[in-house]
Amino acid sequence: MTEERLTRRLVIRLSFVVVGMFAFGFALVPIYDVMCQAFGINGKTAGAYEAGLQTTDESRQVRVQFLATNSAEMVWEFGPQADEVVVHPGDSTQMLFVAYNPTDKPMTAQAIPSVAPSKAAAYFHKTECFCFTQQVLQPGERVEMPVRFIVDRDLPADVRHLTLAYTLFDVTASKPPVAQVTLTRASQ
Image (cartoon, rainbow, N blue to C red):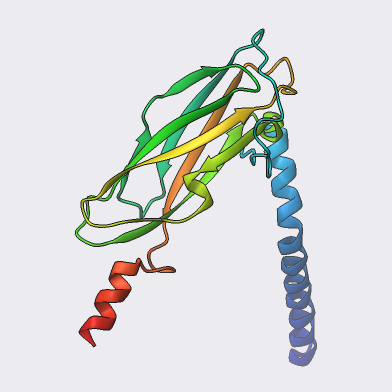
């Protein structure tokens, strides 16, 4: 084979690889959703919910477990005040999470929630949550952050245990805390 033919063949193969990678990038989201559903992980909580529309189902109890983890670069101490609560579907319940910034600089964090099993996520409604906004803590500051939720009365009867998990991410680089921005401007 001539060198020109070999080069053309290589270019065609590499073009197929590029097209394949591009197609795979578009397929990642549906593949991820299917995998999460198949393995019962990473349930996204239900959307907007109006409290007070449901009555309490006193005949059922659901155990809600709380987990809190930090991403690799996050140094805050972060966790729930209790490991779990037992609730009646339809009841509004609150849990406090505590965050502490042990560093000597202001930091901004974002919490990402997940509910397991994933089939129950559509029946878990957060009416108030620290995860709706980014949290800014000053050096040495400790704060209690509430999450108020309702487990829907329509939760499938076979689900008697839910896990609400949060992962806390340091987003200081993408959104500097107000105090840090103020100090930077003042020093100029």
